[in-house]
Image 1: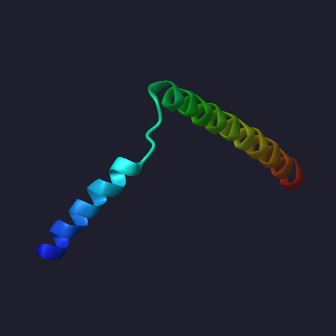
Image 2: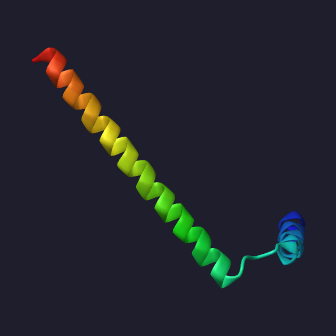
Length: 60
């Protein structure tokens, strides 16, 4: 039980050292992640469509 208490105490000390992002930084980072995810999904969708059309043309 003493080790668990020590761990929690040390974790709290470390969390106080963390430089948490501001609300604006968090919103900006979220926008970047969403935009990147959308662009990657669109790219993969286009490549998948092209390859499936190519394979269909070669088979049929």
